[in-house]
Image 1 (cartoon, rainbow, N blue to C red):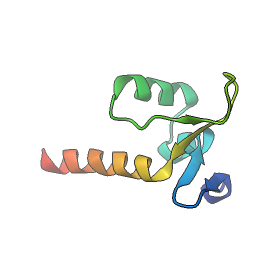
Image 2: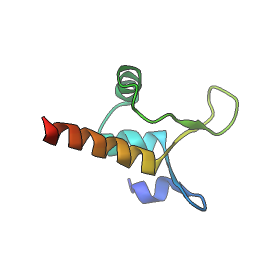
Image 3: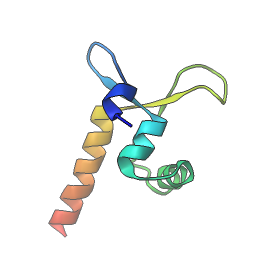
Length: 77
């Protein structure tokens, strides 16, 4: 699966679908849910609608910054 094909572009930010984020982080959906609950610094999702079934997206720049902060914390310790 190509992550680029699952990304939606906006004028200033790239959004990635929750399913593509799971692929990127090599996590199951439940694994992503556990990570979000465990780590308060994990970026919040954007919903595409009001319903519970609405697609969830993440701002790719926020995900990249979160990953970089984890790398920085690892390298500092």
